[in-house]
Length: 198
Length: 198
Image (cartoon, rainbow over all chains, first blue to last red; front, side, top):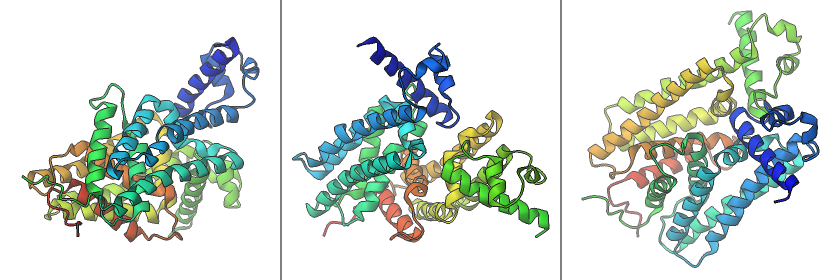
């Protein structure tokens, strides 16, 4: 990696951690520079503004979700299987990039109006992928006739909020969280006998 | 209401709206005063600090949840019925106090360490009420043998996040949101045949 790319990666890493912990507004460019042992002014050789750093972190997270999870919605698999894979992939991203996910979910409203609008449309597109799978499942008779929009919102709320309580050294692995949520969500949607009664 | 109480209520109302929209850090005492058409300095006749205003807003929300929802966990009703009532009461609070709920869920990490610790323990107590009901339901055979902690987290994540997307003038009423979520959550937990299959 070229030297300047390496530095930029360090800046995004440090900024992600600070934005996540203190929030975007309470973090100054000087705070970021200090963690990297450089002068605030030298930081501007690598980045144009603090908001550009926020934007980059948020766009990286958006790419992970839209690139790694959304395409699963179109796989040639039963809806419940697609939903299971999507929940797992989403939880993987959140738990493996906790700082960036926190910034993505928490700080996006501090972007400029133009950029905020782009993120809003990315989130809409993402939500639509979950809704599509649930609608597919209803059409196929796999799922009950639920309100697909509400079910998609509930699913996304559950998996998004993982960033707020998940501890990498806690008792649950990312897989266990994903499996537990998948079980509850799919069972909640399921049209079939849940079979849980002994 | 005494004149000074009235003024304090106005301050909390305006501050709640500003903290909710822009975030705590991006809102100054002067911003709050400006909305009330008074001098920044005169605000300090009514409040000790900006953090005190944040604390008051958060404590009011905490009282709503702990006073209005948590006690339902001990009602003499089947677990699924208690959970239904708790979800409904929680969604009612969030949708009727959107600004304060947003501040409660979003800005509490900006409290001083001491106060943050109090809120964390209030949230733990609240989560424990949901967990208790789910555990009761498992013991009674109403619910499957799920991970009660994860199920409580999922339930709370879903109902908490309502503040992020709910629009009072949107297509869904608070009751419809609560009913839709209750249906999905209880069905997800349910040990019985869901009966949704025609």
